[in-house]
Each structure stands twice: as structure tokens, then as C-alpha cells.
Image (cartoon, rainbow, N blue to C red; front, side):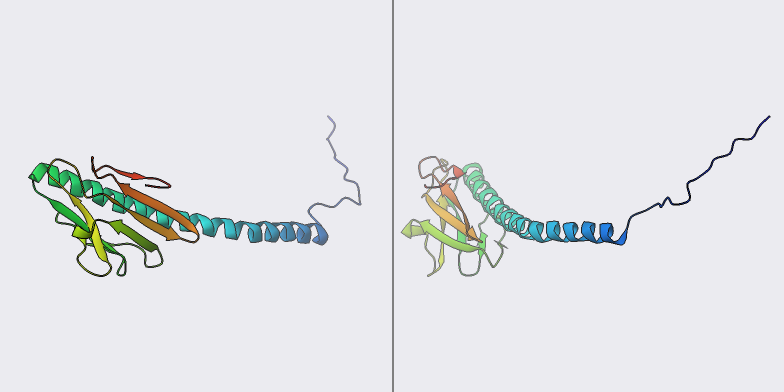
Length: 156
């Protein structure tokens, strides 16, 4: 029986050189620098979409409550304090850095910066729209006066 022997060349090296490691670190740093602004824009979009969804849900819940309870209900929006609420939806707030602009029927105004959307027992409403903006991005919620439906659109 003969034993197997392995001979390694004398001048082989395992691993990476310092220059190769530095090159990889530079590439990672450049990739991270490019990715940070993209990730922060995503956070703005998520924050704005969350506020839009929450207000749209509150509008729909108020409309549904007006139909079920067979009485008029109003969702009030205070653009200065960034709050909204109704008899069907407890008072909530949205992010203070979101700019809000409200277009509504004069009959629903209850203060200089407070207005709202009134829903009737048949499902119709006073109509109007609410624009929310953050970081150069804008989303508009439209409430149709005839049907009381809530949708997002570029223009109402």
C-alpha cells in the first residue's frame, strides 16, 4: 500500500490583498451613498399614502354610518391642527409635515381652517376634495356629491 501525498506549491497565497479589499469597500460606499436618497423618498411616499388611506377610510365609514343610522353625518377636517373625525370615527391626526388643502361646501365650515364633508342618509354628500402634499408629492381625495363615493384622482 502506498500513501497519498499532496504537494503544495511553495508560493501560493490564499485570501485577498489589501488593495482588493479597499476596492470592494469603495464600491460598497458608493452604492450606499446612491441608495440613501432613494430610500428616503420611499418613506415620504409611504407616509403620504398612509395618511391618504386613513382619511379615505374615515370618509367611507362616515358615509356608511349616515346610511345605516339614517341621519346626516359630517366628517370634519382641521387643516391647521392636522386632525379629522366624525360621530362615526373618533378624532385622529395625520403627520404634521403633511400639507393639507380642503375644498368643501360652505355649509360644513365650522371655523377658519375647519371644514368637512357632510353625508346624507341616501348616501349622497356635499362633495369636495382634500389635497395632501409631502416632499413635492401630492395626492387628492375626491368626494362625489351625488353618490358620496370617495376616490383618489389627479383632478376632481
